[in-house]
Image (cartoon, rainbow, N blue to C red; front, side):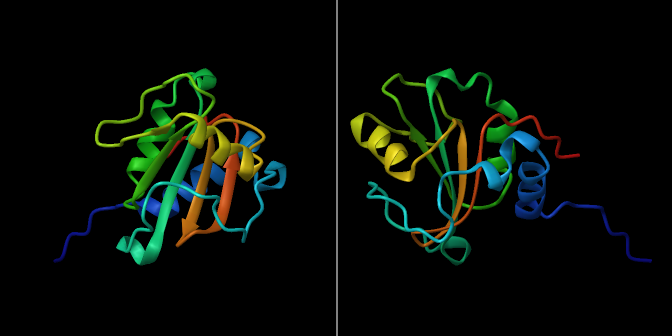
Length: 138
């Protein structure tokens, strides 16, 4: 008999976890779905059908451990944008974009709260969540 282990679909798990947290509802987002991303320094990923996750955060977000874990487990390319001028760490393997350009990017998006998580395809915003992340992935 074939034994199948129970495994979450990583992207679906991330989307469900973000979508069930009241403070991260898309209704509160000022980022406009369907818009293109403002100018940024990275090339569009060809992995995962051009889909990727962009996390825009600042130094005063607190512990983003659970959020970073969920994002990194999504099996999508991840971009980190550390806005507002004060360096804050990102997970190993990510090279955050920092400085005036990163802050201008966040402001052009009209981010109303940090962290903001964007699901993009190419440069088009498919979904956005803003605010504190306290979701459980189990």
